[in-house]
Length: 284
Figure 1 (cartoon, rainbow, N blue to C red):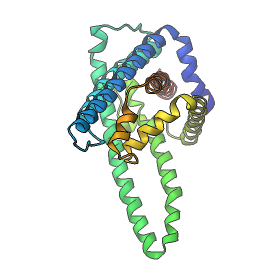
Figure 2: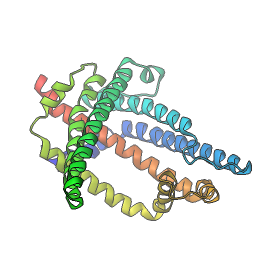
Figure 3: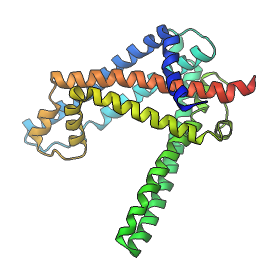
Figure 4: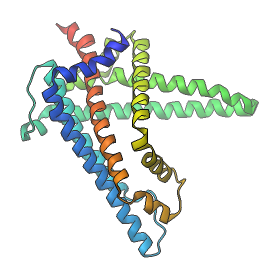
């Protein structure tokens, strides 16, 4: 399997099952827009109330609202992912119904996502400790040796993405109610490291091109959000002005929601292709 074929395969899959794809992308984009807009409105209201009472607002206010949106988004993302896996791999039709929302594979899928998150956290902690230890030793010898950490961090980051991509093959299996272990998922796609690295590079390059084309519409608002989140903007009035609902902010949310929905379904498609090629075919 070639990396470019894998990347294009995600979009070809959406073209083949275009009706189902639009049934998923449109609600996903609308939900993403609604949740993000609500969170932004809540944050704006918190800052506005704080300023009216002469209280210094906390830039991280509204954390509970953000977590709620994350949980709801995760649930609906699982519903869509399960539906997409089953549509492609089992030729099962998809519809928005109570049965589709709350069926057993959805909860199994969410559990699989939690397992992957826990694996990520464990590896991240171990990696951070290792980097801190090496950095400490290097700084004790010479401050200039700190530069040697950079390639190791980059290599570790790439390895982690590839590793998690391989582990994520447990998700389609859960969607089909044919669960496999993490060990089986890793073993099934062993020897494909560089192919997956090339796929990641192609995906990043494609996303950079799209973001560059959309930058006139999304860059100013994106920079404002980053500045607030990182604490670069600390003046309450400036923060309030940046959070104030406006046409640019709505356009930013709309574009990023649509882009996010398309790329999310594409990524689910990639996992579907890998599962079909490396696991499902072996079982037949």
